[in-house]
Image (cartoon, rainbow, N blue to C red; front, side, top):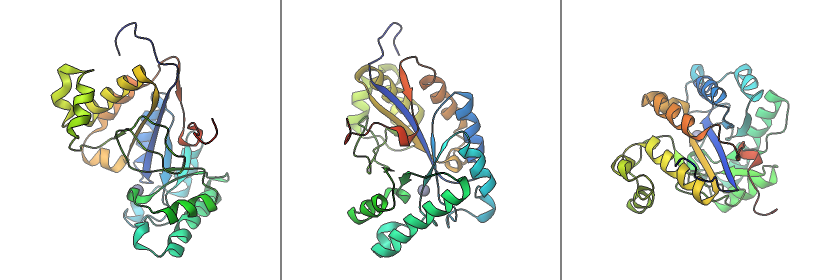
Length: 245
Ligand SMILES: [Zn+2]
């Protein structure tokens, strides 16, 4: 951010972290250090994570003392590959198990791999979820409550040229890096959010950050986006609801 630049009157920062891997502990420690709000979306019996690498119920409870816990289905199936009723069962059972673990209502949800249909939105709403996050990137919009977009995935992607060009106007010297490095991309989007207002939403997976040795990138982003006066740091459940202005 430019020295002396005014923070837009409505800037919201949120983060969310998927899957319920034991490395979520490490990630939570970093968020704590930077005073960052966040939501951990947990599939208690995630078939894509070895049982020994999943967060234990005690680990989930410990996270829940400092962060929002969100639903991510029971076993992390790809919902469109299931019948609508089996998908609805996955969505409901994951919520019930987490609520049994943490002892409070779980009201935010995340579609596994961001794959969903209108039927899954209805199922999420029917069991009492009030927010549901997608994996759509490059947005500063609040978005529909049950189809929340995100800004940046903490993982390298090939950046769309229009996105890079838009951000390059703000950070010309680092424009080239935007194509490769998600931390540069995050800084660019955050600075744009400061200027224009909006919701900056960083999301990712602790296991992925670890596999890519990206912890220093995450720390760099947290250093940049934390501690700004006038910014609301919110968990996903507290994001502004466009339906209720
Ligand atoms: Zn997931």
